[in-house]
Amino acid sequence: MYSLCGQGVIMALPTVFGVDPKILHGHFVTMVHQQQLRFSTRGRGTFDISQQVDEVIHNSGIKQGICQIFVHHTSASLILCENADPAVRTDLETFMKKIVPDGDSMFQHTDEGPDDMPAHIRTVLTQSSLSIPVDGGRDTLGTWQGIYLWEHRTHPHQRKITVTVMGE
Amino acid sequence: MVYQDTLQLSDHGKGAYEITDLVADFIKESSIRIGTCQLFIHSSSASLLIGDIADDATKNETAAFMAQLAPSSDNVDNKINDSMDAIPEDMRYALAQASLSIPVSNGKPAIGVWQGIFLWERSTDAEERKLTITVVGE
Figure 1 (cartoon, rainbow over the protein chains, first blue to last red):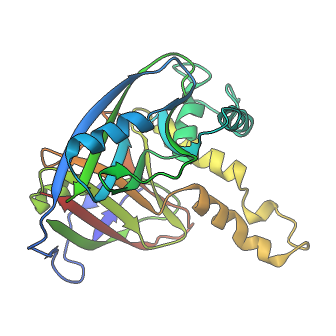
Figure 2: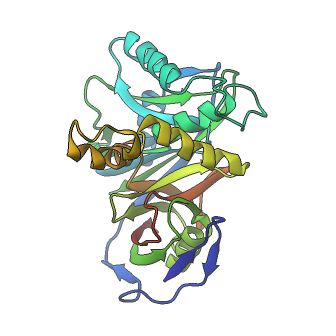
């Protein structure tokens, strides 16, 4: 058992719970392809990265499996969103501004400005990683689905994303 | 290769507990060098989140924000509907994640310098939570 203390530090080392860790399906042969993508954002807003992700899937040579997309930051996140009408993403931005107002007096973590703490909360409310199925060597997004990197800081930033494709 | 186990975590009630090191140890133990790691929490009043580890205020303020967005039932007029009791907790559950997925590179969790993995306990009482970790890769 792992014991967690109030300061967020693990207090004790593990003892065994249930059975020992299992290595399942030892014969399971899978291919793994991993690639990092870097994006320069122009400040707060959403950026369609569907095409870049699909290119990684294509480069992997994997025909069927799963693609995981992970963003290495706590003030930018990922969403799957409607891609036909840009107003949808403008409205999402408006909604977020309303529920997590910049400069809210309840926030103390403001060293980097009024958008600092709201950016962390927006990230928690959305996704740091997405998993999508791969079939026929392509992502299987719906026609109206797009993968977006959502920059939550008002200033431009460099953002790193790792894409991992696994399958056969 | 797939490496999986269910761990029992015991916490001290409401709060965010960092489990990044525990996950890193598990990945190391799996001997998997490249792939993905999925975490899944078997509870509806605890969640997983990736948060900022630079400043402790961040996690407290995230919790305060959630409390404001889905206020505790103490502030709800229960005469309207007794079942409202359960709603704030369910709301927070829906807003957070029961599972998280991170990439594995060089046998380590490939996460950002300021990213930490947290178990977010929302029950006031100390609880034991089951966490299943699955590492897939080669």
